[in-house]
Image (cartoon, rainbow, N blue to C red; front, side, top):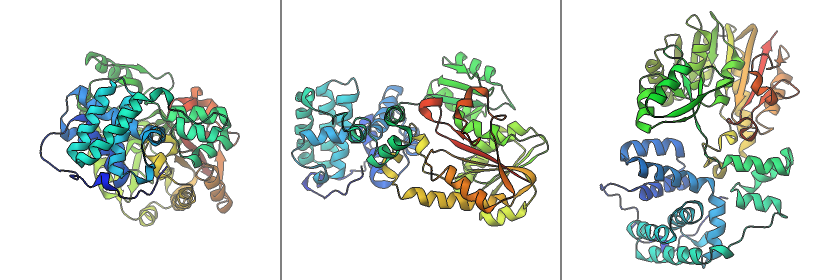
Length: 466
């Protein structure tokens, strides 16, 4: 629901007022929302960086997180409410003012915040950052919304596409695609889950501690969690104070990794003595998992063109104490040539639309466009073809993306197979835990979906060379 907005008088106040004073939770959430909506920042990364510097108390930290994520998850719903009580079209509300209104509306309609507190705090924020004129406008809109809340309406369910677009805040093109592919009931279920708050999953660094030991550590720190019935290294639904989580991560006891991402490692299935290439390795979660799955005698070569992200991966590898990972940064074609025809296992976890990760990355809903999908597919096919040159005869090539679109999944694999007759599809059934059998497609691929499997939406295909 991206819109071009005209600049109007509401936004001509004080500007951003970049002061050195500490920022409260609402002010911090506003700054994050502005940088995500207009600056193209990634919400999760920006939020972690900002919170680490802000040093908020736990209550304010939680409020900043909820506001920042909530506005992205429910953006078109909030915009629909604003449009019913503002005295002008959304397109004529200056973007900074609109973001203050979204934050205020979220508190009014999605949080247990008293009406007067939501309005007063939003007006104070607008006055401090944008000036008295925008503050008066924010006050009028939020007061009207609070008094007329029972009369504000959603689109009729009879117009299902419009209803899902507004009630569950997904762009219309994505809603239409979901309805066409999955049907109306499942499309709505997917939208609902996309707006849910995902639980935290940790993968134990099994070179130092197993999952039961990690869970015991969590419980000793006053936290909770549960062992995965399917993945022996996973601790699910972790709730632990942030400071203790950070300490465990820095100690190298675990990493944050979703179950769907872990299943990619099982699809690769590295063994002792294998040469494994991770062709798109940054930030390193899958590569470090492969190193543990393959054992000390397995050699993992982690490649990526992003030097900054790979430097972060180097630190992660050192923190985890893994000695069987080699890191290469640079042009993929040159790096592939160094191991041409030698790799036993190759993983291409390609850049993609990320539509399977909307629970954790809700801003992608508003950033992606239908025309992005062919672009991603072209890049994915190019990476798959380049990486295939490193696979030895009898070796395996695993392709994964955290999405479900036809263009980025089956179509990419089909295009690759049509050009490379020496590769064939191998069913993932023997490689995945039985609990995930329902993710298998007739072709033998895995298509994990959040509303069905409780993890990120991942597509995985295993191909083997004759």
